Length: 295
Image (cartoon, rainbow, N blue to C red; front, side, top):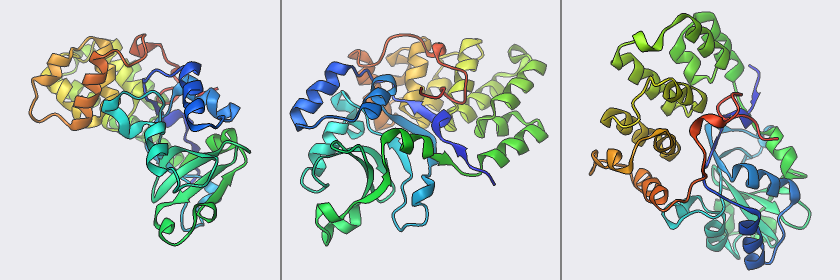
């Protein structure tokens, strides 16, 4: 049961962040972010994983080193739960000196030490009896090493199963690009019933499979403005909502489903209306995995 690198399964935050944003953050916290981490933020500005990512060297510890999502910079107030500065402000004095929280992890936070670049784990439960400087578990010597070490367990086996079974829905869930594209070669999407098209979109959205969501939108298989499409995106999460908006839907299309909209969707719609997301369309990203690997 081989593990696979988690990088292709990292779903972009879509939030804009520039060198100027990072400089303002550094000035405020009086720290300098390590170079490899800065490069990642300028290119991707955080995001969440379609599957929770493990970090092998920490697997046998009580804490672990895996994560669900990286925090972002320059988040609008509607998305403050994703923001690095808000996490730093909340945990200032509770986490070790010279560290910045960079990711949400089960039971705590992943930190980066701004003096030596080390990536650390801070355990939330231990802060009751351990001073900040003692409540830190070493994970990696630098951010690049940590990022490359993140992996998703058992996906290789799931991908083999999906290819052997020629099953498009399993291919979607396992992010099997080869299996999905092999199925597409034999299938005319425009001949599928609306119910099947929506099922494909629902599976892809629920699994965070941006490559398939992008295919369906790009080929006109899914109407980005239909109430059912907007409902599925609302259930899947904010990033899928942004993809529909970039593909032509309007905030009003989602608001037709009120008062049942999730709070996160409402926050993303407000941020969209204020112009907080990067320009460009949904379909310009790399085809590798779900969003393409960062350099």
